[in-house]
Length: 316
Image (cartoon, rainbow, N blue to C red; front, side, top):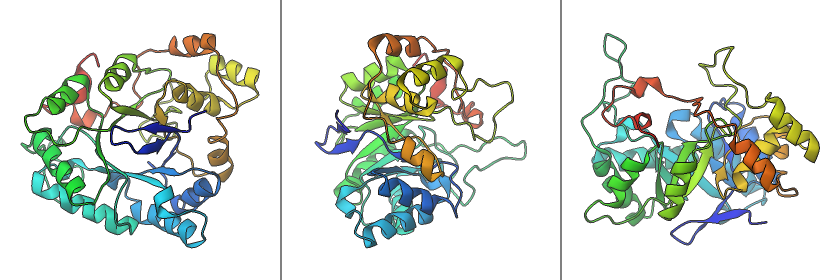
């Protein structure tokens, strides 16, 4: 069973990683340690999660204990929207590296295709509570990303939350130096993303699924939102394999050759989420799970709705 996915740079990216969004400082270092001790080699983070210093602590604790070497790990971070001006890209990356206390990232993603007004406010708002956008376009941001590869700060660059049209714009950019190696998108049985995944794979771009468990701890959850982990149809498949619903939701991506980054801060669940290489869903079960699609986004990111580059207004 392949436990990695090959990037168009030739590097191998572990197919299961630890997600760290909403992992509170004070808990996330322990989560990272538990993950690495349990066999994870891929840690997914981002500047906006405001916990990268603690992620770094967890990573270094494991390196210092001799559990892993830096080169065994695959560390991902993301450029936040307020750093989309080309000269700011390097500063943002250097801040992340300083917080993580690392010399390089294995993968650095443009977190959203939308630029916000630069400055200390991560969500700059006007007096009406509307997000203040900048006037950048993600192509200039991409040039800043390419410079990071040349400077040796990152091994590879990619994107997140980009739709097909936006990816095409990058791929058709005159003078493109480095193709995106990965597109990280929300993906789970209620948002199966078949068209976007097929498109990315056809272009040699790997896909990472975020919120694979339906992001039950997202701050804006409403009581009547659908819950993936409690879905009886998924539970039934889990019972059949003697696995948890979470393990089924993770395995679903692995069998589509999609990288998956379940988030947890509970050591037992972190371990469980990695025990997904010892069973296989049948073709029938995969079809059943794909049939749950309802184009439901747990993370619609309404603060970007009015942005010229808001990615979710197209079919895929």
